[in-house]
Length: 253
Image (cartoon, rainbow, N blue to C red):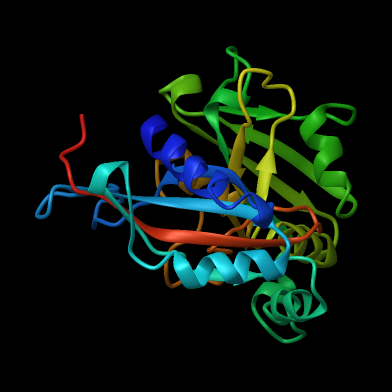
């Protein structure tokens, strides 16, 4: 992963006028079990998210089509460029929560978080009272009833979830709209830029908590939920893009 990051950053540096930066690089699931490894082709798929102005991003998208990196071990295709701060993007996301839709009536939100952002003593389910970081974070989007952090048996090496029950459905809609197609950034990590894709699902908070504790996705596939996929970085600044066809030809270590 580190070698892939360095190679992509070198590719961006070869065009200094573009002023586009690599925001994050992470594995994405491709197999039926959610594994990012293709056992048949001995490949792993990565997603790279970039941040920059719309013009340079679209120019790079034209040239980054099955472009080789790492001496041919990686093939990268720049798949998508969009402005996460544009009115068009806002209307598209808001449309997911239009009046009458199942999402418009949900007051709960489940947000996936990396375990490394949690404290070492995080219990399986831990209430977050007013004044704590995650309670205050959720309160940005509306008045909340409960905020819970849910850890995993793997601790900080695994994943965690933030489950929020808002007093009004408008709060859940606002949170999902604000985080759609974005990444969360952890400024307290001084060793490296630490980004995580903001993956939200709306639904009943209690039901989502129960499913997460059982090791299941927050919402069943047939349930009333909205999975905000295809995230891209940027808190309303500039344009962002993805390269989601990054495959390594060599078997992973």
